Image (tube, rainbow, N blue to C red):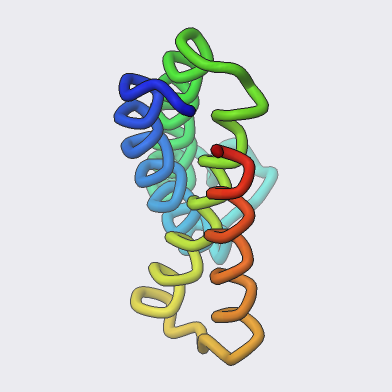
Length: 113
């Protein structure tokens, strides 16, 4: 069973990681390897910052729990990204995506028990 501290710390890790993906996707339209233009791409930099924050929470969770227990919780980021992409990027959710989300939830709970 997962420790309460690890569970609580993984919530912001998942949320920040999911939001970071949305910012990176939005910033990808203006992405370039030209450093002069890249420095003005706030969306990409903010996405990286959120990923860094997410990773910091993830590291704290790993301090208190086994990797084999914490890692499956990170899969909830995929669910959040799918929902956020549907809302903010107007991506369509189809039947297969919903089935995949159900499998992620079931698989994560099986690994945690």
